[in-house]
Image 1 (tube, each protein chain N blue to C red):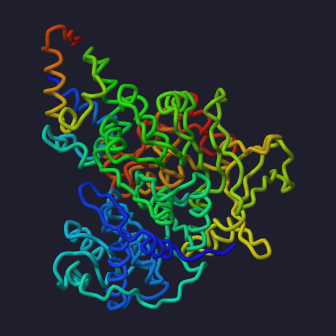
Image 2 (cartoon, rainbow over the protein chains, first blue to last red):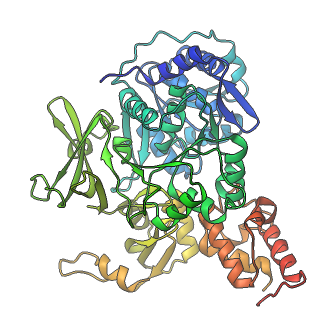
Image 3 (cartoon, each protein chain N blue to C red):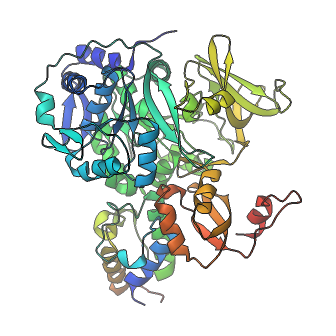
Length: 515
Length: 89
């Protein structure tokens, strides 16, 4: 089944519900008609600055009304947006911006200095939109909102089809550099279309946006809201940290549909005070990104009994590919299945030898169909290794080990490789090890994941250093290369690392003795 | 060691703080600077309860008590000074 492009969802919402609120951003709101018009104007400003079909445009600003205007403007220009998480170190951001070939950014006045740093770090920036005054800074033009809003409110006529790239999301790469997952309009809309039906979204719903834009959970928040012509309320930074503020936010915003990583729900359950002030408006709670410890999920269901609960599963490369509705009336098993494949995808389980796994047998999950990415940006080799081209469709080797039970549900068992989850983020242990070994003093390094109830995994590093290097200094220098969630929680200094008979670092013995 | 110093030690060790210890000042806003995320906050609350022998209610876990090391120090010290507050040091 083919779908319209993502921004067509916005246009339809603007026709169906022009005065309906599209985005709630603190005390500010924007209607669907305004969001559509303003993103048209920005798309025209982008065209005037030479942004054309196929261009990648970076987003370097806080999640806000402006950021969402920026997203739709890029899509209407026929471009692909690339969220740049400002919490990440400059070295990593500039790598991503250079790798994606970014010449234009949507940003904000307070981040003009960050834009300049990117330009200094070798990103060939031509234009920064959303910066205050029209000026020429360090070779790039800053185009302010005043100038943008003077453009016509009719989108430029750019041909966009289902296979046009819509966004590139960078995730941790095992070789030490992040990799850009290329997703098309069809990838996004086929998921959103299914999800909106599955949870029965309507105009009366109120969605929340908890995940950052570089996280694919945001695809549901923004675009499923547009498909339903319903408002999405952006979770304020402080409510992301303080549980009772988060509970207040859900109550006062009247959120009906919640979607986040389990850890946000865990903190709400443990410290949100929701047994005394219940969350009555919630009717759907969706979680994804990591395993939800069943003991907390049970508590949450008890505290918010009226809601339906969904476990969405899928790596960024397949958006969401399987889903499970958690039964709330019967007792919950200790592990929740990842469920059954979306109707628009096929899930096959392949054993090590290459043959299909029978029910109950463990194998690697292969996902084919409409939600599967188009590859890794600028990396055909890696793409060829992970995307198998079946006649007429793409099949992604997830690297996830699963088992299908006779009732048809899939159960997640772990990874084939050294990719782990921590705090909802996906981390390749190899990328952390590479960053450690890039420090002159580090002679040997191994990073292992230690299972942790609250954050899924904590990272433990074992290093051999010459000459001496302090833990604080080591972490500081890592922070110049890695985002905070990839900095090891603990660092243990050793004279040497244990080796297996083949001379490889023996991670198993480290995880037994080291902690 | 006063409360602020002990909290600072905890944060240097347990949070995502990766700059020199002396830059983690009493006044530094912990949320804006991403020193505390939700999980680090929960660990901090649990640690304060066991380390200082105080009980912290959900409603007390708010920015006015946890926005900076200074505020955490004042909050914990006021709990310890309150009638019935039994501090273990």
